[in-house]
Length: 109
Image: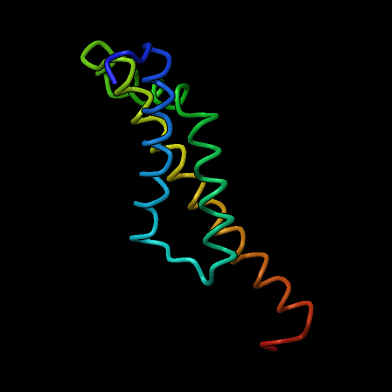
């Protein structure tokens, strides 16, 4: 594994952070079924990959710890945070849309 370039290590950190963020999310907002879990997991991982670097830089700057962390740590932190936020947002949206669909169908009146 010592043959990996710094860019490869950053991709590995993004992957680990994105998956960890989605896994942590299970602890506080459980999905209603397999389909919802798969959608939220996929969106969480994708957002962790896409927004991980930017989110990590922003978090490190806001906390004033950017100089104390390496690039891999910043990407790992940002990917986990972006994944966690995406997982939560998708969960809340899916529940809200489910409530709206039940209202339109006349269930729960």
